Length: 136
Image 1 (tube, helix red, strand yellow):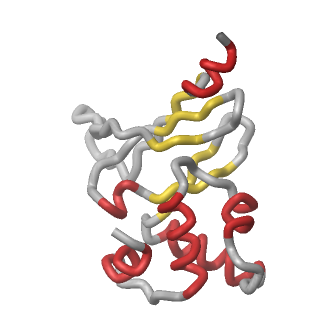
Image 2 (tube, one colour):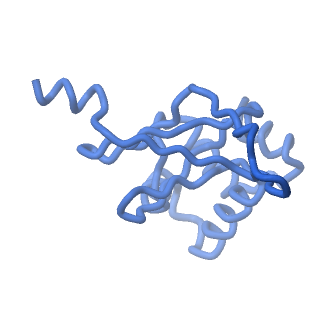
């Protein structure tokens, strides 16, 4: 699925900024901060356009934010934009890379009465295989 198809599926306008943000995240294997995303974009969008696009994509569950232990925020393309399953993330504490993991997360079936789950966030932290290999 490409950026245009994702925007169409979510009934959003196909703006250049939205399309480029999604394209960058489709090409990357890890979640990126706002600054990292901007580095891949041409310098044709003002700050307001960029942040409104990011906010719209997040509100429409195309992107999701991953908040790290030091309050750094990174964004990844939601697997939910491509499928319906939630997924955990892995944060390498050595190289700071954040990866979406393929495992699915099931919503707990024993919630107290009157509770409902809108989203589930699971963040695993440790050392990635690249950094682990560098240690040995």
